[in-house]
Image (cartoon, rainbow, N blue to C red; front, side):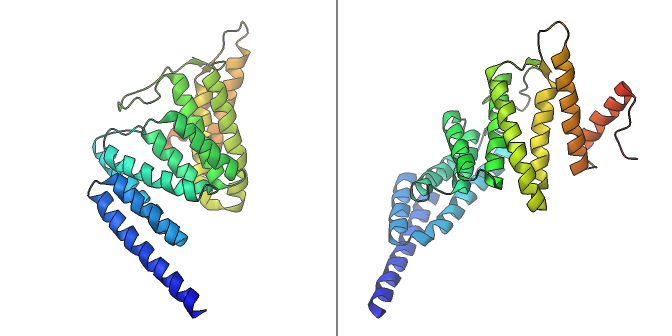
Length: 270
């Protein structure tokens, strides 16, 4: 037993050394060599993956801060070097822990921020398949819905703060069909998650926001305009759900006040 403990201890010590050296290299801009040392660290002591994940998380945080300072949006205008470091580290972790939904979800977010959309779609879908009834699955489908929605509006990858797509669009467009289906799947899972964990409230609210925005701009070319009416009602229903989840939500209140004027019904609890 003593021999095995000694060997295990030596492996852990060697892993930590590789980890620290790799971290130093990456912080100094030598990403490739740093990743190779991280790889050696994991092979020696697989439990070190949590520490490596934290490094990726820290790099993403740094990228996010720089992007906000540069007035960037979902698609980063600054912090790209830090973003690429986070991607490289998580790509490494995905090799060793390919069954972890949280890694694929986070990787999807990073790809999305970097405008690597094919990779983002694949990562989000992997996360959703690995956690089909859980929070990572719901969040991955929500983000994937946003991706399809932005693609349909023609603003996919647009980094300008003022980027906006058409306010009225044809829901028969394939990207909007995918956005709706994906968001509704996210909603179905999100409701189940929220019933067990109230901390999922903001995430569930954001899914309703996506569906409200999707339906509020929906239009069809038909004589009776019935589809427009139906989608308008759907947008209102999701707005009501937002209000239930957050009675102080300014956007929801604004929407509902306008709906009260239009319909003569009372939606806001006063």
